[in-house]
Amino acid sequence: MGAERRSVLQRALRILDTFEDAATGLRLSEISRRSGVPLTTTHRIVSELHGWGALERDGAGCYRIGLRLWEVAARAPRSVGLQRIALPFMQDLYETTHRGVHLAVREKDEVVFVERFVSPETARDERPRVGGRYAMHATAVGLVLLAHAPAELQEEVMGGPLESFTEWTNSDARALRQALADVRRSGYAVSERQINPDYVSVAAPIYGPDDTVVAALSLIVPHAEPHGPSVGHLVQATARGISRALGARMRQLVFRYAER
Image (cartoon, rainbow, N blue to C red; front, side, top):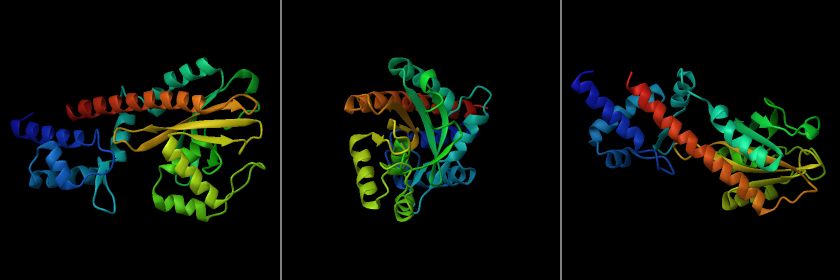
């Protein structure tokens, strides 16, 4: 690798590294300041990264980590996906509580469940199934993902029909708006008998390396059991562990890919 190529690569990695602790998207001037790369060079490198998909640009002109880096991670021979990273944390939570543990992501305006642990005695009754799609407004993971989704999607969901699955399903837009605000305030969501009258789900967000919510983790408990703040804090702690592992793994993969 020539010195010039190495210099460009190092600058690109420094630019990517500026997003590690960025709570929101960054403008070009902020990326330049954080990375120490001159603004004109930052503009050129960011444009190339954006064109390749490593960075995404929002309507306000701010940049954030793009989906293409996740795709690279998924193809890398030694890479692990979200499920594989989350599995040991999910197993620990399952063994601690002996209750169902679920991992979900958002696909447009639906929740898709991608992994789960289910206790044998409730395997037949407990939903959802892996690969199953559910409405966002009625599940705890859905409330978490919707609370951190773009504002336009939130308005679309609240403006559309909110299907009722049980007599406890929240199908009122005003109440849903308040529920989303409560999720952002408390850091976790509770869905009480909204999908299944026998169960309560408690969910917390999982953050990607750019501090955006990429998934949600939930614990399913029988309605007759206690499901207060202590359960929410337990799920939060597990979700934070997955978030840290995701961030560490992504940084490792970015540097490994760049060295090729």
